[in-house]
Image (cartoon, rainbow, N blue to C red):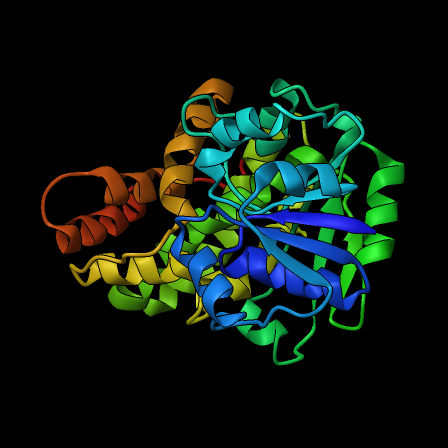
Length: 324
């Protein structure tokens, strides 16, 4: 199979490496002026993986799009709509698109698959690939489980069957809304976890329980299956996001609580803002998300905001545990 992976950062470069190991011919694309692309071009590798004979590195987007039967996209979630405007300049009606990214569009509250549909891609040609796992573990041979979801049942089965290996066991998703929202929201919970690592570590257990329940309410209100919040895309990814030293979102929260700044991308920051749109649109309480949003976008002392956010959560009126 000819596959182009658009985005050659840490996750995109791993996906190219992984799919090439599965015997596919792969183009790994990145913008020429990006540091991640230049590192691969100049050294043939980055800190995670090395290019092999089945991977061609390219900065030519037209070449990458025309080459592929399957186009895998792994970029910042907030850049997707603009990026699709570039891609759809070429003929893509026969291409399959796989989103290996997690987020909700800040300006609109749209899921990423919805952004593709609004860019002119048929829902039957769109799949998402999400779930737990860090590159640092995968390249050491540590296996994990992930999920591929799509409105097209035939497509998700074909992709999961083609991509699975002894390194990644894929499951067939059954709820695209829940899979996408769950995957995006777990990054928000990751920021909360990083804050708790500094302020109050024992609360990470309650965070896992209450966070998943909060996301389940939102998924249900949006028309998805609330049980998806307890699947691989959300709760199944908590260990990777809430506890791992490699999680950008957890590290962002930890450094914020210490009054420091994390320089790398933490998708949960923008996602907390996007989920506020959905909270209002669907009339669902998202108290943990609200707290993370206030911490990320509020004014004043960062450390003080982190402590105040926990106080606000603890002074909320009592509820039944599984309230709607």
